[in-house]
Length: 232
Image 1 (cartoon, rainbow, N blue to C red):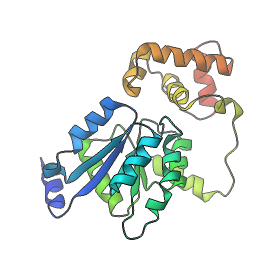
Image 2 (image 1 turned 45 degrees about the horizontal axis):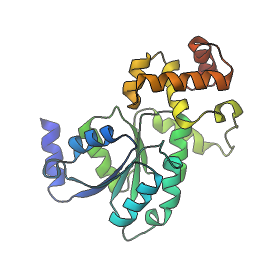
Image 3 (image 1 turned 90 degrees about the horizontal axis):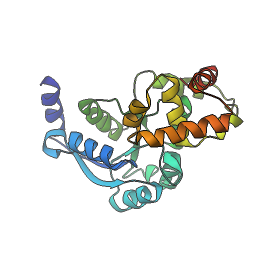
């Protein structure tokens, strides 16, 4: 109750225009329901997109204050959106700021979008009030991270060395990497499907592809492989 009142008091003076970029329609609908009640939250959702091309088109047309950006998207991923929207981020008079909102909490995903120009990175476990607060903070130019993710960025920018290339990991698609991490953490197929908004059958297909590409026999070997590379 206190949190809601605080949010309302803060947002009575201004509104933040937001674009949602995520390839899962159900997730976009859920976020819209959670943050899109403008009179309550101060957030005005002015557009949605499901892939890179749509995202660039919508951002160009609406010039929002903040873009909630998924890391893994058809057409090149969140980093590609950031690259193509760089002129809008550099606009001093009306900057478009990006906040990554992803199921992934992998270091390479966090570092990739921050290097691309995003102002923050939060995971999809974030609560509605905290997401609204993060949107306003990013709109104000602050950097916002979910707990523990800031450490990835500090470590990355403290070192001038480029991260080593992992040829085995590079064989996997972005979605296969997401499935790999969740399976390695002990998630059941149904839990992975729920987390990623895909079917159990699709999860099974991704696991089979991962095992084949990495030349592993079962999920126990997969877990050991992922743990050795600090992916879990």
